[in-house]
Amino acid sequence: MAQGDVGGLLVRLVEGEARCLETFKDDARSLVRLLELEGRRWVVKRYRGSPWKTATHHLVGRTPAWREWRNAQRLRRCGVRVIDLLALIHDDHFGRWSQSLVTPYVAAPNLQQWIHHRPGCPGSGPRRAVAAAVGAQLGVIGAAGYVNRDHKVSNLLVDRACAQGAAGPLILDPARLKRRTTDRVVFKTLALLAWTARRAGAVNLREQFTCLRAVLAADPRLARGRPQRLRHAASEIQIFLDDFQRRAEARRPAPPVAEPGPLTR
Image (cartoon, rainbow, N blue to C red; front, side, top):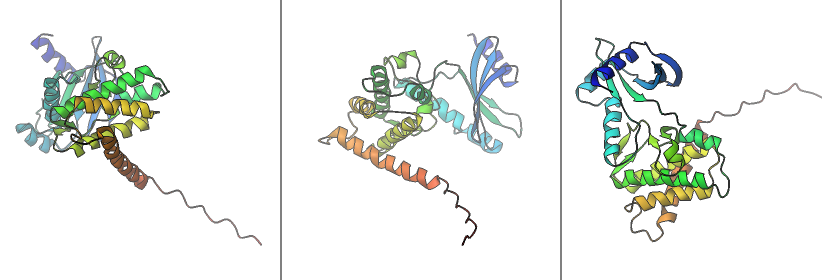
């Protein structure tokens, strides 16, 4: 697409000429919509927040949109698959500064949807192939010196290459990519992935260990020097999973107290 065509497309998307087909997300942090313009589909993510904070942080490239943009470039340089980012749009109208990211639409389910619609069963070859691809990709990220603190199943797209086990998933929203400091942060990331995968549907033990073995194979530094790397990693991940479970139970509302019935003789 020529530069002029891109500019015209972005103006039309921002000014509301496109037809909204679906709203993927609408919360305090962002609005993510699927838009169609002249037969082509685009995903536009508009970040929400203080206009003044957006304006000042934009000057030093510290807004969430800029972090997502730069981190996507970092992952791509490491050979990790990331959703293409067409443009970062900064709306500089006085008093209503905001930012948006535009990406081409990829017709593929995220890993949460993929797990939900493909129940686990013994001997499930394609599911183990995807588990291995997901694990290998996470190991590559760790070996490159990074950790994605928002590496959950809803942020991973399973396109055809990933579904066949030939490549890792396409990563969405890598804004929380950070420098890896210790093994512990990697184990926490793995626990988050396991926790969200279990909540998405049935994930059997063989698939979980297939993923973990792929992580360890791609990231030789993880649990280095441990005589039983796999068992050590699984134990560390379980510590975080137990903590996630405790936090979830603490947030669960207490059951209603039954009203006392009438007194009877």
